[in-house]
Image (tube, rainbow, N blue to C red; front, side):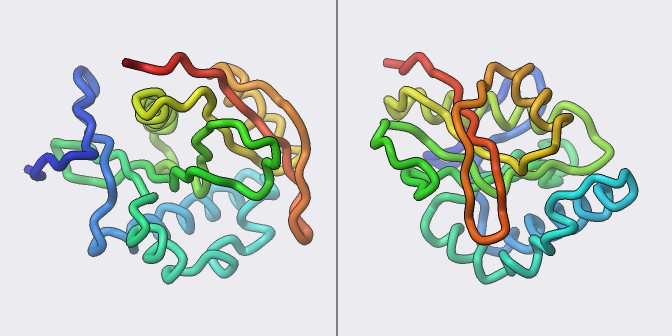
Length: 180
């Protein structure tokens, strides 16, 4: 059983814990990303696998996100498995409007399992709202209509496009009701 810390959030009914990652767990994030890249290969999806996301963002990147207190995970309590992860950031250079938002990057869930990504999003949204953020924001590669539908089904709307090197993305946001 894991010890609850200040930034942990109890998730009742799903037997999961949303929390900051521990340094020794950081390699799990890269493993999830590589697993997801293989899953994409098997389905002919062109996204992280084609860009070699694991080389663009190596282990040292996630270690730095951990040290900065931005890397969160969803842990399945019974098994202790890390089933989903993402970095929650106060600023994102892809968005230049100065809105008070929380930005999700490196969002990944265990391939072959359903529901953990949606649960992570709900937890991240609650985390943002509890900190007074009015919006949750993220992006994904252009052309991935399945992922666009996934985000739309969870209340995210397309609000723009972004470019970074060879990356062409769609910007999504969800308006939140601040808590407190």
